[in-house]
Amino acid sequence: MTGTAGVRPKPESVGAVSASILFADWVSSVQNFVQVFTLVYFLLVFAYILTSWMRMPYSIWLSRIQRFLYDVCEPYLRIFRRVIPPLGPLDISPIVAIFTLWIASQLVIGLLERFD
Image (cartoon, rainbow, N blue to C red):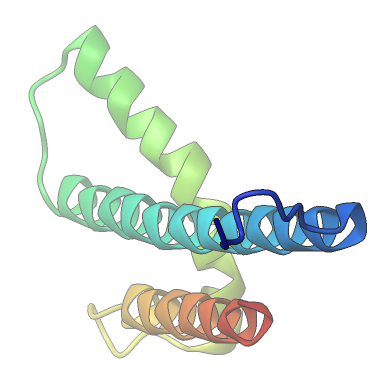
């Protein structure tokens, strides 16, 4: 009987293959995390913008939600508000902030694809 059933791979090659598979899985996981983080943060900024435009009736839960959105989004938006002056009543800094976040996430994902 001829065949390769009795041939065993070298232990060094098995370790290298499993390490490369583990690294590829790690890169994929980080890419997924960056995509999900970007989406969630975009939604939080969008919700913050919407809640800042409308007056909501006083409720302890609504005020807590607004405060949470303020605490999460305002430090990031403040970076752009320092640089971009408001155009009358229109504040375009959230638009620039969202585009910057999207571009940064695409750059990170692109860099990680080079490792994959």
